[in-house]
Image 1 (tube, rainbow, N blue to C red):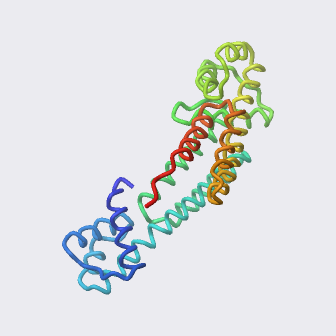
Image 2 (cartoon, rainbow, N blue to C red; image 1 turned 180 degrees about the horizontal axis):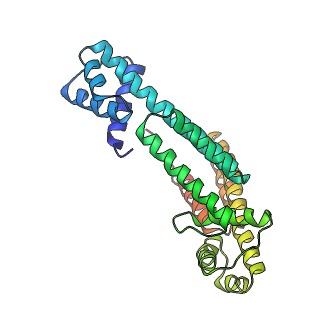
Image 3 (cartoon, helix red, strand yellow; image 1 turned 120 degrees about the vertical axis):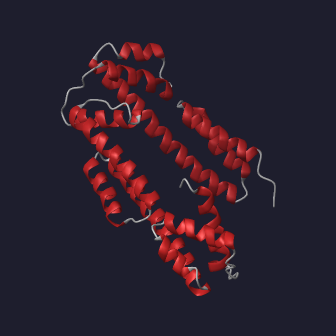
Length: 262
């Protein structure tokens, strides 16, 4: 939320009052916080002001604010996970419907805005899939994945200047050299193979890193720090994608420098 500080503050207030049983002290500062956050979760200013006349209704207002934030966050998070699954399967229509379902019920402006942005992105990717024309406002690798799906549907790859530029941008992120890239860009077949290599390296890198993270966390929690470190060393021994190498190195540094005990 743009009002991130308010959200943090009201969440602390919810914890203290609704979970820990602290009394709700309706100071001017607390009233102002509740009025602001009520409007941020689509509760009218009049309804919020009416609720703040008495302590029981003010507590109910606080509970409703918490519920709307919690519901909206959970709903959008689950939808995003489902959208990612459907995108990986190439089902952009299904992914769009998931977000339309969110918008049909969501009332919190922040979560509605996030859902609308995601729907716009999915709509743009659907246009890339239908036409083969790239959109400079969309993520490079997502567009590559859509173009790969378009090829699977039987469409020929058109090696345009825009596609050449996109592949020249994304190839280094998959540790593919300029020489390899330029050689591949001499033909549509080479460009298609280059696309596949970029996407494959990221897919394999992500799976490798997530599996290592799971094992690392389990070993760390069991007290086996050396075993946990080895998981990231194993990633670094084979990983070529810079993004996943950096992530593994960060995890390794965190294990080598654990936070001080509180």
